[in-house]
Length: 237
Image 1: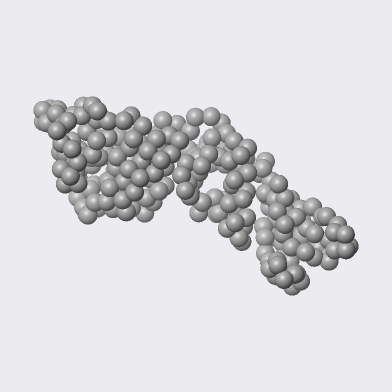
Image 2 (image 1 turned 120 degrees about the vertical axis):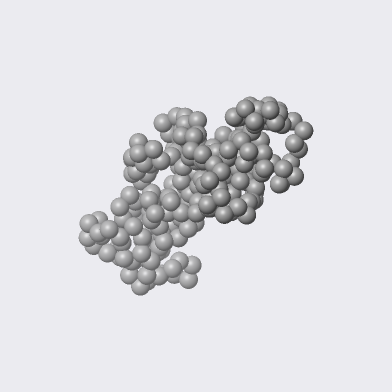
């Protein structure tokens, strides 16, 4: 799909070899003037209006987008925020980027995980840990870890929990996000980074896991139902 870029009488010569196209100071009341747009990864075409004015349209090259995303996928990165994608496919206007991302979703290259987060799905299953990757992207810059019912379930201390729900503590804000891979529930914690690191462990996945006792303490602190927890399983760990 082509996006209307600007009305110009003359398109500057030789722009194909530049990293970006500097449009001259001409335009209409509707479109901005002096607009700078990237050339690499985009294609242009010219349309003639009935009044003889040339209309230049542009669009992101799907093949370039797929190649770039595939390279990141081979490096182990399949989850992206809109901010990440803005750096990969630079465009001056956010709505232009969002329109391009919408087309990539329609064409099965990306899947919209939730507001502001996308997953590369062209090559198939993005992996069993994709929901944790999405969680990390949603609370980037904060300490987050698997806890509460999700952690206690893995330790065998609780069984009646939906398998498609991830419960996590975070130093960021609380919130619930529904994705195609399950629901992520964040609960805010005031624990210090040192306390979090001391009471969590690496489990070979994107999120750290609370120790059994830390998950139990979190559950009681936030006022969740404790009647289904087998405390003997916590002591056995």
